[in-house]
Amino acid sequence: MATAQETLKGIVTQRNMRIPWNIESQLREEQVATEVADGVYQLCSTMTNIYLIEDDDGLTLVDAGVPAQMELLEAGLECIGAEMTDIKAVILTHVDPDHIGLAEPLRKAGIPVWVPEEGYETALNGLGKPPLALFFFMWRPAYARFIRALMQAGMTDAEPIAEAHTFTDGQVLDVPGHPEVIATPGHRKEHCSFWLPERRILFSGDALITMDIMSGKAVAPEPVRGGNLFNYDKGQQMESARKLGTLGHVTLLPGHVQPWEGDLGARYPSAE
Image (cartoon, rainbow, N blue to C red):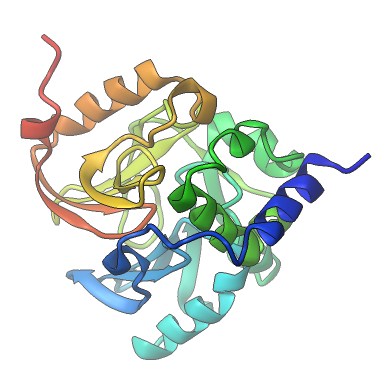
């Protein structure tokens, strides 16, 4: 009997030539070390972002994308005049397979990897078979295209992370940029975001993204759609969105597609 992973690959392959893009063209644009804020660079392919934070101590890689993005990372480093050895840490918002792809290869190269404490066991033991929820939305052309792009970039081939440091809510990480950890569970139980208060930069991971993955349309920052079929807890998603709303005006750097600047408090006011 075929595994869930093999079945998913088969669906993606069979539908390859028949699926219209249905994803707005600007959301499919690639970015190679685009400076989106002072000393912060966006690297984007397959509609998935990784970021570099630069300071006098070196670079921090925020999220680790999918395996095929190693070439993108190498090109991005070349663009900013840096080398792989300048990366002093890899920090992950969560341990989904489209966010950990480069983590273990970089760890093998001597770069420490940091993961949320709640996701530590999953990071070390591996993610196992793709969840059945991945199948439920394949009838939507935009979603099918999005998953196809991630599959072709090696999403299901991400290696477990053999060794990792952990962090918890409120911790300021001793890595270049010194981001503050904000626990934002909902999309995943362990999900965290990273905050640079002096620069008002928020790395939101998948707590808030700027694309509706079901329709392929650009949106203002919102939690990943799909309810509890696709997320850990949709109620926690909204609680985390309101928590991030207390930050006010931010430059938001999501896990997928385009950055956004504006007042999160206006979009997600306190429930009180």
